[in-house]
Image (cartoon, rainbow, N blue to C red; front, side, top):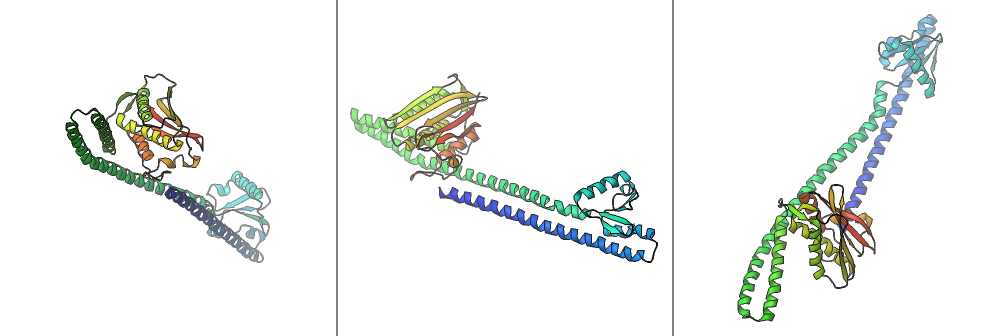
Length: 382
């Protein structure tokens, strides 16, 4: 349906917006880091210029001391290299400032970085990024992680709220439908009893009345199924293969003659699972109706029951129109339908029944356009 195409478009637009925000954050942070680095280099050059002016009126060795307390105000880690294999550090940790092994390692890192040392009067000054510079370099990563966490939290909260609201809507609608069906069903049952009295033993009329009674029983079953949506149904041990055979037989009697039904089992036919028979039959019948609608009056429908790890699996395969791979998940969303009639609730309710009430799984196992589809149901073994 168009609503899900629009939903996909909004997701794409949201993704593009997030990427743009991340790119702008990275570019702006890089700009700030570069500006700060140029500023720090400027501080060092200004300081050395001042030192060179001082050296003209002072002893050269006094100039080489660099007045480290001034460097400390610059907040830049530096190494003073006088060329005599002795290094002096500034603005590192107190122990590191005099640790020759540490300073030699930092000197090698400086040389490997490709930076040029600033030449002073009788010494070279090796400078490193300040602590603030390091924090700014990590800022884009922090921003990206924070943005991703915020997006994930927002998506989770929005998705949970939407699913909860959908569940309440579908459950309320189902119960209201069951309630509304109750009155006409009771009235029809009363009219059937009246017709039986009026038939006076007429076999033809009694046969018709019998079929009407069967349809009313079916309506009662449908109403009972709707009434169970939204509340925890009672589960009992049921033979899965026999239950599938019963559903297939029911639909076969109501399907076109040119549709072939087959039921197989690749495991022990006595396997049982916990299920509510009414609701489970609803799921299977819904899948079978969809299969019949997609085949146009002729084709094959097969159901295969087998074991897989801790599950009993049922694959329902048809030779219908198939489903595009991009719609495998969409078909289970409320309101999605390819039919001109219907509300698109069948598979949505089927998913709710299998996953929420039976702790199982239902999904499109495979499908090819114009070749057919296979839906798979998995129920925990008893």
